[in-house]
Each structure stands twice: as structure tokens, then as C-alpha cells.
Length: 163
Image 1 (cartoon, rainbow, N blue to C red):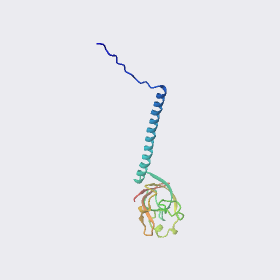
Image 2: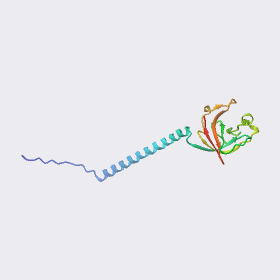
Image 3: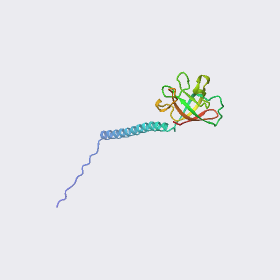
Image 4: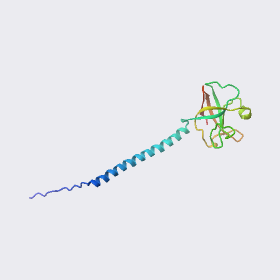
């Protein structure tokens, strides 16, 4: 018997086809990389929002603060009330925008704010400083308030959100 020759035909791409395939492979890598970067950025922003809601992100603000007439000693903790602006944010500009922090244990700031002069203090807030106004407690005078536990440091104040 005669043996039949088997020929295997193999397609070898031309130079142009190889160039196009290389470009397509590079574009695919770029597209996958861009998708991964997009997912990381969006995920990072969402993670920051979640961590901020849990109080794990500090916010540094100069805030109008009533401390009362009794001295507040460094290292001492006080329960404070933050009354936000109409936009739901703390503000250093009392009267102009309405936001302030009251750490006045005597209660003078609640009774008559005109008797007290606010101090503009550098405060580190652990918790959200921009919230919906529905999230605060009512003070009975129509103002919404947020409660904070605050410690006076040597040159600043640190506050942790209670509500």
C-alpha cells in the first residue's frame, strides 16, 4: 500500500495582521486596567463615606465654641451640643450662619447667647460634621442639635460624636 502524505496547513499571520492583533491585545490590557482603576476609585469613595459615617475619619474645623465662665482644664472632658447651620454643617461664624458648639456646663449659652462671647477653637471632630438636620435632637426652640463628647487638649479640642 502506498502511504498517503498528510499535509498540515498552518496559517501564519502576515505582518499587518500581527500588528493589528498586538494593538488589540494592548487595548484590551488598557481597558481592563482602566476598569480596575475605576472600581478602586469608586470603591474608595464609598469606603470613605462608610468610614466617615462610623466616625473613623477626623474632620479639622475652626468652630465657634462657648465654653462658659468656669475654666476648662486641659485633659478634661465635657458633654457638648453642636447646633448646625441651616445647611446642616458646623460653622465658625455664629450669627452669620448660625452654627456653634456649646461646651458650657453652666448652661449660659442656651439661656442667653448674647451674654457669652464664643471662642474660635481648632477642633478635631470624629464623626460627621455635615448631616441632615433631621438627625439631631431638638433643643425645644426649633434648633436641631448634635451631641459630642469633647476633650480640651493643650492647643485644640477633640470631639467624638455621641448621636
